[in-house]
Image (cartoon, rainbow, N blue to C red; front, top):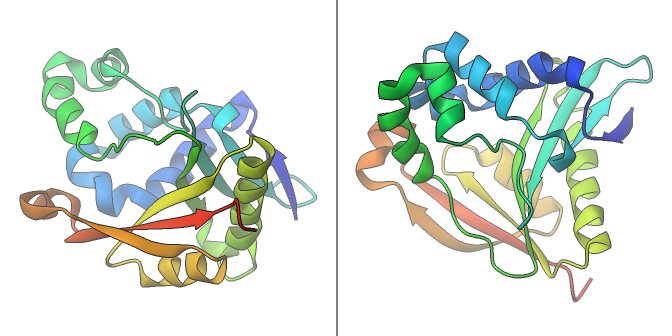
Length: 195
């Protein structure tokens, strides 16, 4: 397995499909139907804010996105939503998707989605991608890496804890739990200054 920065444009569809496989349970009610969601994600992906894991022969195993003050992995705006869903679809989806966003503090990198092909889970791909994001945060002089993990994803939370992330808060989804399928998310942080 090797880790590479970003991914080539010809891999956009593949990365979008992997993203959707991982996050459709959380985003499906807002971003469905699938073909429109994939169209939006494919065009909104920013490879400069990602690392990919692939086999030596080039098969995609997983991707991790990160967000800094300069942008994140999926960075589509209202016009991108309108292109995929039409103006009416963008008008109601945009504000609901914006509710998922949280601002970044100075010196903070957000691990902005990690997704591993189902056939490659349990092979250390997620750990390799997490270590790469942590190394990138250090190289950029960040003070910490932050992520949010939903309450139903206990396996991911255990993985993050093994890499030194600690719970630092809880975000209740309230009435939005009907749309997003989870009741709360735990904010986890890894401080880099002391490591």
